[in-house]
Length: 308
Image 1 (tube, rainbow, N blue to C red):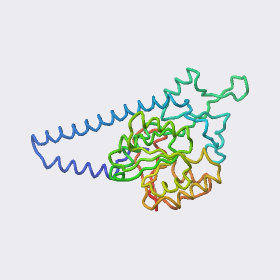
Image 2: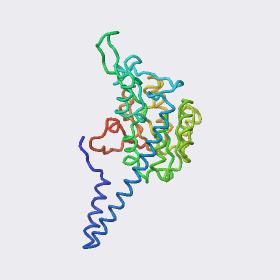
Image 3: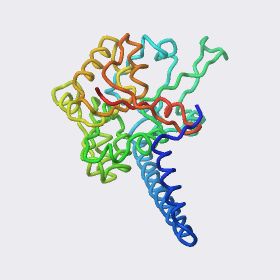
Image 4: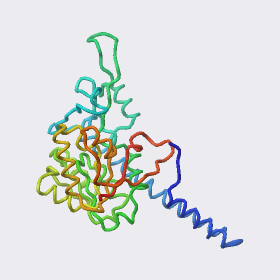
């Protein structure tokens, strides 16, 4: 998919062009200097945030195995959909893509810390690559969400809820990029071990605006959070953690509980998640997104909706 500038970018370009045409001579030089300073300031701020995220990654790595799994987490391999044929305990490996990028995975494999292939006939050389699954998004994708998908105006004074917050990566990005705008940043996570990782990271890096809630999103407290949130993030939150009937119940509850006008960020799309369990999205309207040229597959799976 080729890059297409959004209407917002087109409008901004027209305004800048209009302003540029309205000034002459040395004023144009000063205007160009001002734009350069603005761009450099934004880039410097982004670089600083990326450095902080890199420090967070290294810290969280010390608390989890490369798979990013915990002992109290139950993985349920899909029985329908695109992963059904390839996903099983024998033919799959889990790796956390927030903590480890492709180069990291190769290095882990070289060190013997992560298997990347399986034998189709025991003890033979007939091997196949393991199917790699991650329940976290890579850094590039989270930067895209908080720099391009969610605007400061949409987040100002609002509550963001990450459903199934795992390592807390989405929460850290929300705080770093929009901590001054968001009124509340909350993650709800069933795993006690993951909650301890998040709480430890929050303390270590001094996040004052992040709240971690341990529990089921469909408990009384979880439902209260679902109903209160203005922005909700669902990153493949049910498919690998619930059977088909439980997934259907989960999405019905989400559709009935999330308030009208709330923004949903989903990976993959609601349509892709629901078609596997023979459901349809009739309760949220998709907002078209413009993906960066050469975007990673995970980034292309990001979708944005507004609840009817």
